[in-house]
Length: 141
Image 1 (tube, rainbow, N blue to C red):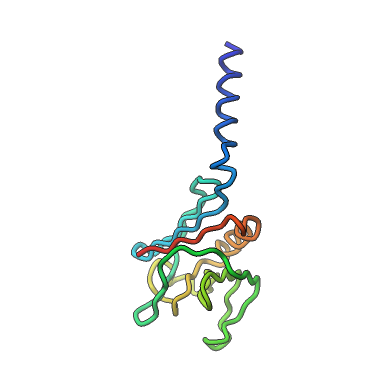
Image 2 (cartoon, rainbow, N blue to C red; image 1 turned 90 degrees about the horizontal axis):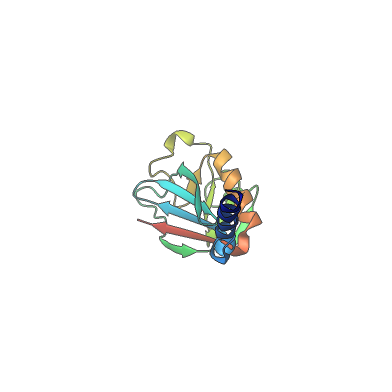
């Protein structure tokens, strides 16, 4: 009995530390059609959050990206100094960031950025900062 338990433990521990899991880092998947973000850490789903992407006339680009620049406190130079806390820039001026317009989360409402609840933006910012070289941002329709 003890041998069987030890074998199960060793197998489970070994699977948890496979190179694929260890190298997986953080994957952020934004689905514009459902206005949701799924965050995977080490290959495992850790968070599902409502987001707001570009409203009519303002597109959020689709594609695969890596974080280009992180800014804990940022204010938009294009949109009247609007606060963009916990910004993760992934393409030019496009970023994932916190928004205080939390009632709009779950529907298209931004100028193209991906908005999150500030608490969730802080969590994501921390994860990306810790795993920046191994973070992928995937945005789909």
